[in-house]
Image (cartoon, rainbow, N blue to C red; front, top):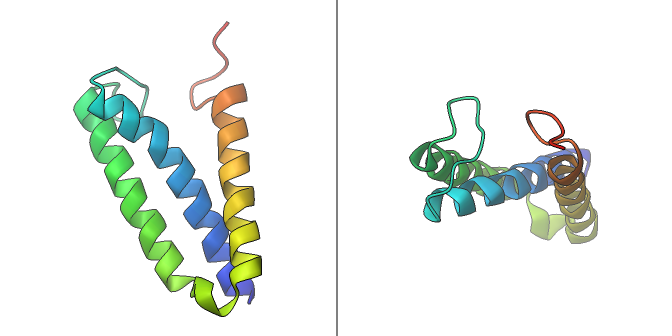
Length: 94
């Protein structure tokens, strides 16, 4: 159960973090990453993070503990959303 909760949490974190990078990449808009703000780099970063989220979800065996896994995914998505909307990866922009 603990493994399922932890892996599900990180699946939520990676999935939520993948979304802005993927969207900025496919819309050809720059967005900061450690590797540069290029849309192609953002698309690839988002795509890789979606793959990682899927693998973590698979390893979590979500079907064996659906309630705990879904709550953990939701918390991971919530925390990553708060991070991006509040501080962001490279500090607060005013």
